Amino acid sequence: MKIEREGPGVVLSLEEIEFHLLRDLVDQLVTLATPDVDSDKQEDELAILVGIDSDASKPSDPVLTRLYPDAYPEDAEASLEFRRFTERSLRTASIDRAARVRARLVPQQDISLDQEGWADWVGLVNDLRLALGTRLDISESLEESEMAEDDPRAPLFDLYGWLTWMQDTLINEGYFHED
Image (cartoon, rainbow, N blue to C red; front, side, top):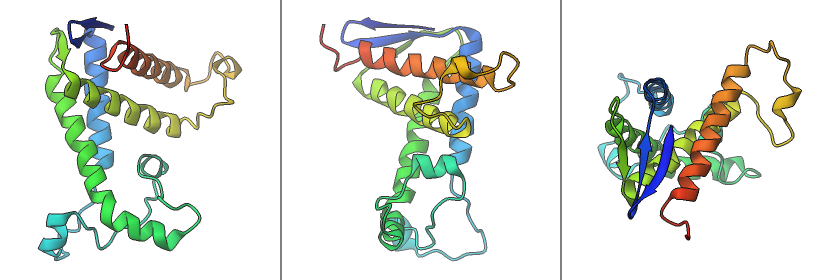
């Protein structure tokens, strides 16, 4: 992958394997972020319209908890109330951002990003890093050198490193970087 500043924007050049990898990661994130829907349940249309989720609860999946954390970690009741009013719209925003990025993923074509596209990519890569880092239980104290050479997670740590590089490069080459 190559990320370069070009005029007022940023251009990404992906290898074919990177294209397929990113497309797959985006699809997995969308699947994960899409709320389960109970088709037998009658939902209040007004609540749906304004984004209120009357059945909101803290996700059991640690990745979802990392992507959509409690607003008030010391107050479960206040966190749940906050979640009722925000989580549906946060998930929708994540899914919409992923869809916009995925729409720009075209094999063997450079991707030119304006400021809005750049912000979508930075946000998506951040979500991917959070999701993968949570699955791998990555902490600031964990060093790759601590991993055994035959550890089956090594390719996923490499992927995490690639996403970290991508995020850093996007930010450094992006719209708010001073020359």
